[in-house]
Length: 462
Image 1 (cartoon, one colour):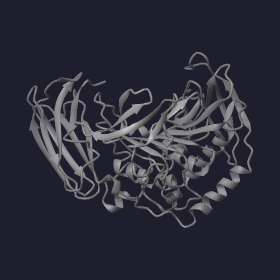
Image 2 (image 1 turned 90 degrees about the vertical axis):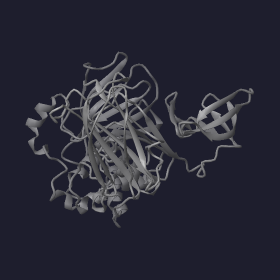
Image 3 (image 1 turned 135 degrees about the vertical axis):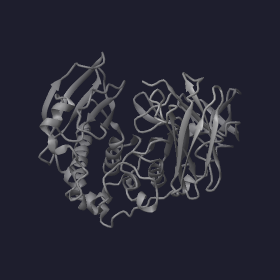
Image 4 (image 1 turned 60 degrees about the vertical axis):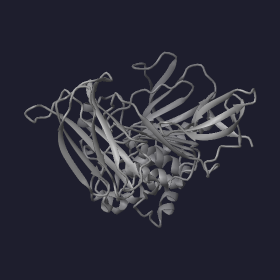
């Protein structure tokens, strides 16, 4: 791991700029959060308005440097900074950094059109799944990489397709009824590992239905036709021929199967995944009404025509009409449960603007946490996270004057709200005991797991 990197701060919350406003990035070289200097550096600043600026500089030990930019339309800026050697070559001892800032992000819209027969298309699939009874085709106990106190099984179940659904099923030993999570792997030809989660059943699925007892190289050799799955133009011209149809059908069967387990609590079912897994989880939550919590990270496949409208492009298949039925930002409009989203301001596999299109299309209780300086696969030592959220039960986002109850049953009233010196909103609360306390306003959107169930951190009682 490279331990020399860039730390970046913006002059205010990076999600709160208005179109045309100047965003100021203050940057310093660091190692273990201590000042360093890299000598020369190159920077590039791109915007969803089509703007591009770039330049070079030289850092001085102990001093930061600034880069300024703006976006004239609702969207994001993407800043990259790369350390250079004296001869101008990239200095590999430093991590290149990707950062970002958003401008009027609440106005970023979904650029696609949901097909007129979208609900008819998915209704037929939902009907097929409803009439299908999944059976276990293969079940083998496993112990490798399994936490103590857990049972784990390599399992394959039947589907209406030629290929089964397959993954690793885990749950704590000797427990009663439990909530369940159906979890989906990201893009690739890989087996899934056991994912042991305290107090929960977890069914972690690969995308293809193949066996999990081969490593990635073995699977690539056995299934060479999957080397470019989902990217074949001709397949994507129709929703019926695209590879994604078989993926989601297997996933929906898996979500149905987990509800047949004797140790499921009969209530709580989470759909979870990151990247391609987020795309899969959202489509499952959209078309399986039993899912009561959607937990997705860096969701892929959102707003598939955004680049046709000038937005910075992500990594995904070339748009064809058949893909419109699978767009994650379209699927979120059919989700009825609370949604938690994680994203990254430097991620241009799943660009921030496309995640915002998904968020803005969602009509349920929702929260979105953007992490600064993280990309799709790079995790900076700097960890600055910024949240936006919306609650349909409190659409005006007013807490003052209301009474609330926390998960322990303690009751309190919000006396006032204010913005602190970091630009974050705080709520001043008074408990029945007379004790006063400050809570970050953003945690009103928190969804917690308490005693195996999903619940809000705070519930309004008046």
